[in-house]
Length: 218
Image 1 (tube, rainbow, N blue to C red):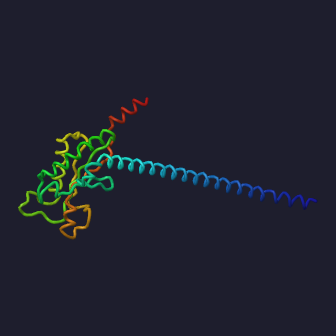
Image 2 (image 1 turned 90 degrees about the vertical axis):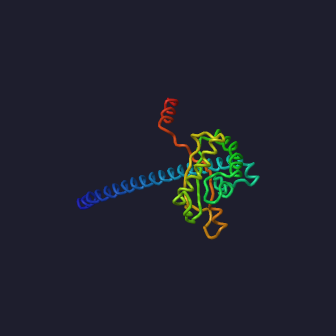
Image 3 (image 1 turned 45 degrees about the vertical axis):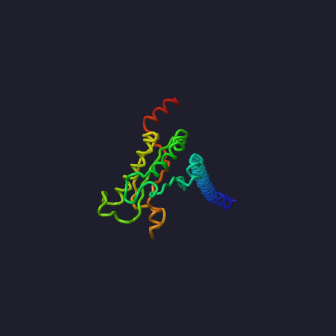
């Protein structure tokens, strides 16, 4: 009898240790499960935000395309991936930064739809100038394609503002020969790359605007 009781006393600590190990394992599994659920929730939220962002961008693209229905129908401009494209040959003579009469007419056709779009969306318009990859002629007033693309973008930007677009909603950007629409392989492709594009960009919220929104909420 004493021998049996001694065996029982010796076996008790083993079960206690096993129980502690099981409790520790269960705790670890619970922590892993909580972490997995947290990651899934975070991923679901990120996917939902990305989906909402894409839907908003698609809505803005459709709204802009609808606003430009008339100049698009007449073939005065192109519209792809949210960017309005205008052929450089329509706007300017080769290596020139002076608007041609046809170019002015095209810009005039864009003012009303662009102004309508801006009144409905808190965004800016970026006017981007592009050139082909050929070097500038020695007789040119510009040292390189950067200078020509910048001045063309500025010319279009200033003309749009003179025609009625708000000055604080339009700005110019230059890309030179970079980001061609098609590879520069022949005269036709280079003509396509000599262009001006107008695209919408979000307007950054200033500190003043953020403070005003905070005060309004409080």
